[in-house]
Length: 118
Length: 110
Image 1 (tube, each protein chain N blue to C red):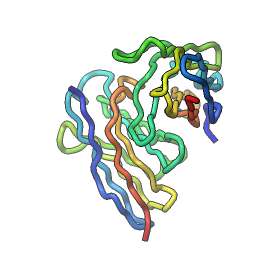
Image 2: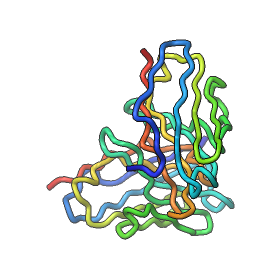
Image 3: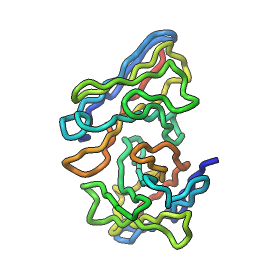
Image 4: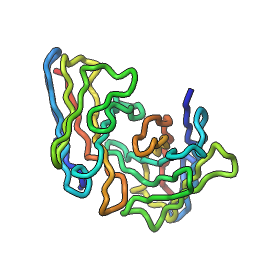
C-alpha cells in the first residue's frame, strides 16, 4: 500500500522559512524513474506545481518560485523535504506531496494547510 | 494565468456526456503526455487519466481522455452526481522544464 503524508508547521510568520517533510511508504525513491513532487493550492484556487526530485537526485523547480525553493531527500530514506524561503501571506495554501512515476502524480498525500500570518 | 487553458466551469445533467478541454502549446501538450486529476471538494486530487488516454486501475470507463495536437480533452459519459468536482489537466513543458497544471474546471451536475 502506497501512502504519503505531509508534515510541518501550520502557521509561519512573514519572511520566515517554511520546511515541509513528506514521509512515504510502499515505494522506494531508489527505484529508477521514481520521483516525489510538491504541489500547493491556495484556498479556492488552482493547483500549482512547486518541485520534483527523482531517484537519481535530479531536481526540477517551478519557474515562478525557483529562487525560493529547495527540494532534497531526507535523512531517512523514505522522506523528501521542501524548504521555501521568505514566506508571504500569498503563500498561504494547502501543500501536497505526491509520488511521480515518472511524471504522473499517481498517489497523493492528504495535504497540509500552511497559513502565513504575523 | 496558467500555461494550460481550461474552461473555468462545465455542467451537465445525470446521464449526460460532458467534455472538458485543455489547450496548450507545442512546448507542452504538443510534445508530452497529458494527465488528468479529479479533486472533490475538500479532498486531495485523485489520479484520473495518464498518458493522454489511459485509465489507472479503479477509474470507471465512463472517464476517457484524448489528445490531438496542442489540445487535450477529458470526457465523462453517463454523468453521475458523484462526478461533481474540479478537474485539472497537467503536462510537462519543455521550454520551462517544469510541470504545468491547467487552471481547473469546476464540473457541476445539475
